[in-house]
Image (cartoon, rainbow, N blue to C red; front, side):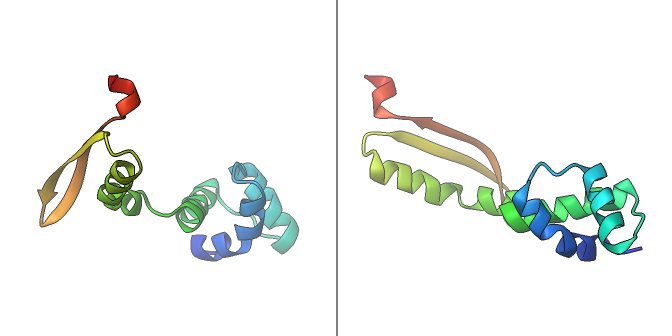
Length: 106
């Protein structure tokens, strides 16, 4: 049996072609290519890793919230935008985001 990182590396091309690749389709593909019978849970872990590789981590996207707000304000000067964070062990934790574009207030 292969580890989920190895499986993900073997499935990356198929996943990029179809990001809605089902777990059963992953199993079939691995059986056809390598003659491997893989548990669904292992395919699930590989799929999770593939999403991380192709889409990035949610934590990374949330860490860019302040940059997004500044860009929105720069492109739309009369927009009101704010972001609320709390801190846990010195790390910021996203709580909520408020954006009101000028067009919504006039």
